[in-house]
Image (cartoon, rainbow, N blue to C red; front, side, top):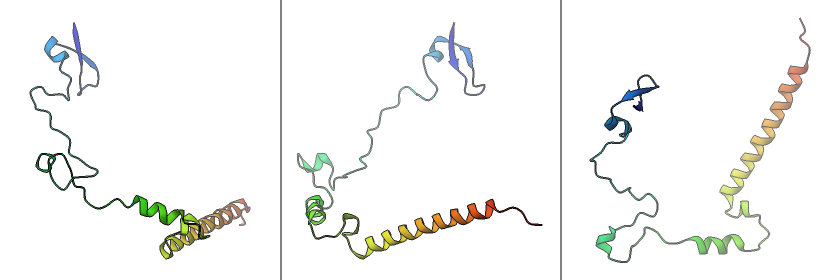
Length: 115
C-alpha cells in the first residue's frame, strides 16, 4: 500500500502509486527557470557582452582601505566625520538613557505601596 501526506487532514492517507510518488508542491512538465541575478547585476546580458561583463559602479574598496587605515589618531568608528559623531553620540545617549530608565523603574518597583 502507498501513502501520501494529506494537506487537508495533516495526516498520512492511502494513495495510488502515481500519487504517492508525486509530492504536493512539485509539478511535472514545467520547465525550470534560471534564477535572476541579485548582486552585481551586469549592465549588459552576458550573451550580448561576450566574454567580458561591465558592472555598475567602480570598486571603492582599495580607496576605503587607505582611508580607514591612516593613523591620524581618530578611531575607526569616527573616521567619516560628522555623521559618525552624530550616530555615536545618539547611541551613547540612548544607552545611558535606557540604563537610567531601568534604574528608576527598579527603584519605583522596589518601593512599598503606600495607601
